[in-house]
Every structure is written in C-alpha cells, then in structure tokens.
Figure 1 (cartoon, rainbow, N blue to C red):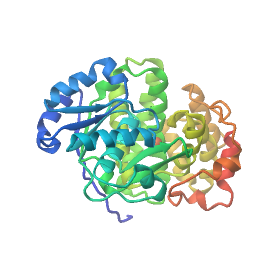
Figure 2 (cartoon, rainbow, N blue to C red):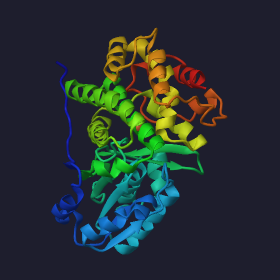
Figure 3 (cartoon, rainbow, N blue to C red):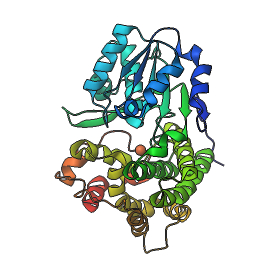
Figure 4 (cartoon, rainbow, N blue to C red):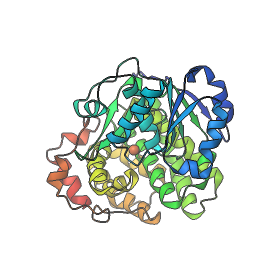
Amino acid sequence: MKAYTLTMTTRTYFGNRCVEEAVKKEKQTLGDKPLLITTGGVLKQLGFLDEMICWLDAEVICYDKVTADPDVMEIREAVKIGKECGVSSVIGFGGGSAMDAAKAAAVGIASDIDIEDYLLKNIIPPEETLPIIAIPTTSGTGAELSKGAIISSREKKIKSGIRGERVTPIVAIVDPTYTFSLPMNITMETGFDVFTHAAESYCSVNANPFSEMLSEKAIRIVGEALPRLSKDLKDTQAREMMSFASHIMGFNVKNIGNCLPHRLQYPIGISTETSHGAGLAALYPAWMKYEQNVNEERINRILDWLGCKKEDHAGERIKKWLDNLNLSRTMADLGNTLTADVLAGKVTGNLKNDKLADEEGIIVKLYQESM
Ligand SMILES: [Fe+2]
C-alpha cells in the first residue's frame, strides 16, 4: 500500500444548527480584541449575519462587500479596516469567496506586504497570520479546510491562489441548514465542484489510500444527492449529504490537490466572469476523455460510482450526466471570446498533480475541444 503523510490541523464542527454552540466554545480562539467578518451582502439580507454577531457577543467589524472571485482591491480594503481596528481573528462567513477573502485578509493584516505581491510573486504567508475561522453557507469549495485563498486581480486579469499551511482555517463550522435555501443554479454548480474535487484528487499522482477512500465516498454521495436536488431543492437530507461531501473534499484539496481542470478554469472564470462550477462543467467532457488515456481504470471507476450510463468513452458519459442535470456548458455558452492559445498562456499553478499534463500541447487541446 502506498505510504502517505497527512496534515489535519482544523478543528471541525459539523451538524444542523451547530454554529451557536461552536462559536461559544471557540471564544478563546477568537481572542478578546475586535473580530473581522468577511462576507457578501446576502447573509445580511437573510438575517444570518445579525444572528451571527449576536452569538459572537464581541466587538465585530464586518466587511460585507466580498464578490465572486474576490479582487485584490476588496482584500486591501478589508486589510485596511482590520489593521485600523486591531482585529485579532478573521471569520469567513459565506461561500468560497467569503472564506477565501477571510484567508487573504488574515494574511494581509499580519503583514506589510501588499496582497497582490503574494498573488503575483507566489510568496508563502508568514507564521504570524491571524487565526481564521471558516463558516461555509454553500456546499462546494471545501475552502473551510483547504490551504489556499483563491483571489483575483481584475486589473491584471489573473485568478490564482495564496497558498501555505498558515492559510488553513484553524476552526471550521459546517452547518448544512445554511444551504437549505440556495437556488438551483448555485446548488448544481457548487455541487459539481464537489464532484470535481473528488475526481481530480482521485486521479492526482499524490492520491493515497486515505484520500481515495474519501474521494469514493464523495463521488457516491454526489451521484445520489445532486440528481435528487435537481428534482427537489427542498430535499434536506440530500442537502446534508452534499455539505458532508463538500467538507471531506476540502481535506483532499488541502492534502492532495486538483488536476488540470482547476488550473484551466481560472482563466475562463476571470475573462467571462462565470462561476467556477460552470467553467469546470465546460472543461470536463474533454478532460475525462483524455485523462482516460493515462488513468483508464480510475476514470471508469469514478464514472461508475457517479452512476453514469456506459457509453463509448468517458467524455460522452460525463456529458450525458451533465445534460441530465442541465449543467452542460460549452465555453461559447459562457461567453468566451479568447482563443485556446491565449487562454493557455494564462494558466498558472502546479500542473504536476496530473499525469496528463506531460502530454505535449494538451492544455491547448483541452480548451479547443471545450469551445
Ligand atoms: Fe473547485
């Protein structure tokens, strides 16, 4: 059996309505200085933000202007507020973007280096990063466990990550009930993201027996729960299953990492301003078709666990599954106008997780076939 090393540093709370008790237990972690919450505008409208502030029972400063793929300008603003108020910890409350913003703000508040420099120069965040508490309200990114803050520079048309052990939240509080009111498009697209973390960590050269076990569990859950949710958004048991699958895949994203689709989605997302899940859905038929050439058994197992019908090749199988969930996209559907060569020139990050990356010209080929 393959030898492996894993790091589990995040104290985790999981369960319906577990948040109030969890934040009270974490008083010491939060410190006695003001706290910074990063979030989008929706949680305020839903009343979740006020409820959270009440439970925290502390001086709370809110940065509630986080957008999808948070921009360095937003992070700079949150960092400025955090520094002025002398905050002792940062809570990311919302979807992946809110948690990524919290991670980046926690790095920036404890540092004199501009946040864009971390992004562009691949600087590893220092030891003295502020404690990060992550409270997801969607089930998709697993950002509450992962060690990356994915942010963008719209000015420079770059989406990439600030990565390091100190970017990992020290506490994750996962309450599936927050996801119960998510609309269909967010439910489906974030749900597909869960599947991609499971599939890509399973195909990664870093996969090990522990991560493979988690991948299989997550894929089987998505294969059952996402089709159920496509028919009935009020299926709360399926919602809970998706929150759990998303959460355990945060563990794989941190320890194993993703393959080519995640690296290739970032340039599409930043140029078309479309969601992470939608971009991944556009890339998956081509990626699975070619990945099958280097990882045949694994790709076949993944598609069997997901419940895909047997077809000629993996690309067809995943395409039909996506069609059934109304998730199929092409890059043209997303509004892409860039050529495959231009997009390929914008791909950043570690490609070595994926055996397929060794094939000459594969990135251009994947973009071309996804157009
Ligand atoms: Fe993802």
